[in-house]
Length: 293
Image 1 (cartoon, rainbow, N blue to C red):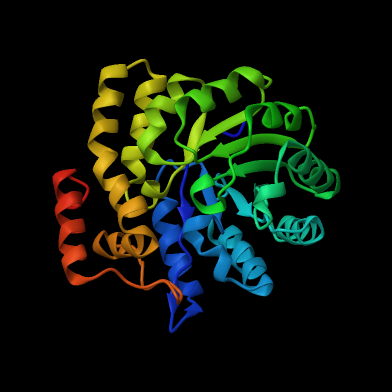
Image 2 (image 1 turned 90 degrees about the vertical axis):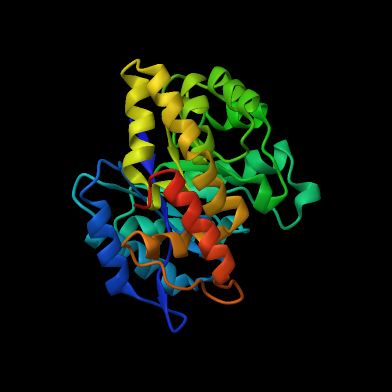
């Protein structure tokens, strides 16, 4: 069963081109942890700025560099059914174990229950690897309904959801309304503990790029029944998680990686690096949480 903690890994760039040697450097460091695997081309991977050819090569290289016990989840959702099937099957051919498929959103006024059922069913019918639904309203402007997820869970090749909505009541409803073998993953490190408490089996969380052991420990402590210890660590991770997601975004996450011995580098334009004052604030937050010594 798909479970545990997965980082949505940033795509490293040098001179605005993918630096595969830096990708290898980062993955080899993560390989030494108990992370369950890696998400390639999630929101933090700047997927929107990658060409189709870059995406396929990025998945192939991540698979090559990953330890044998690490799963590869590829973000392959595109606006059209045809393109999503094409990219997902290309990802499967180069080694992806699962696909993470974003809800289409360009015509968001028409993206309702019926449209999502048709989109995901047609994709799931044609792709060679299992499908995870990716719900992230802050980027798409659409929020998939529980009744839609419950219907999609009936498809044998739709095996779970990454829900980044930060709505615990909605998350609980999705767990309750879907079969026991349908995987529910939280989409941000601020709710690992809360998500587990309502039945999620792990998370795809940006903070795991820079604090993998802390994120894994929240998960492990909870599953060991050490509730107070898990919750205490969850509290400790709230501000760092906010800093590398909502507050400073991809630029902040990449800067944090640089500070902690990974390669972060600069985002691809038009995204930009964070400022010197923002960097000092980030350092302070990471030190307070004892992530940065």
